[in-house]
Length: 105
Image 1 (cartoon, one colour):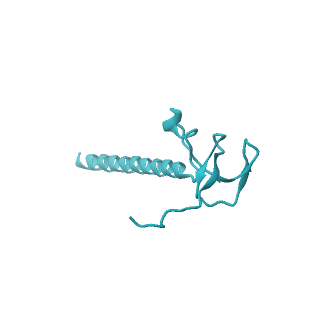
Image 2 (spheres, rainbow, N blue to C red; image 1 turned 90 degrees about the vertical axis):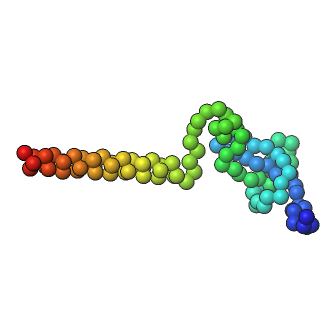
Image 3 (cartoon, rainbow, N blue to C red; image 1 turned 30 degrees about the horizontal axis):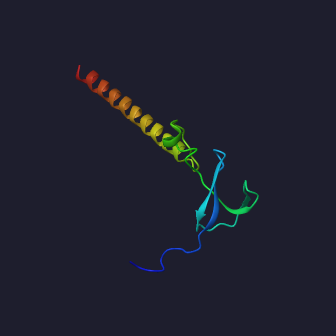
């Protein structure tokens, strides 16, 4: 096993999920420039997270979509556009079939 590859600068850090209003204090070597005053009156480095155990659907039991980059909206727009195109193509094919049937008679 290689030596000296793991970080040695572990310190107390606050991880904060601002959407859920949840924060916890733990040791980490993650870099940050922000700080926060914690419940014990001391100031610790702060790392903001988008999802924690307080907001993740697996732990909360409720299904909610946390979309920070618009991915869900883009997916829904693509799905709607595909459905519209499918229905337009189906209508066009139905119209073409009706014309063929009218010419055959």
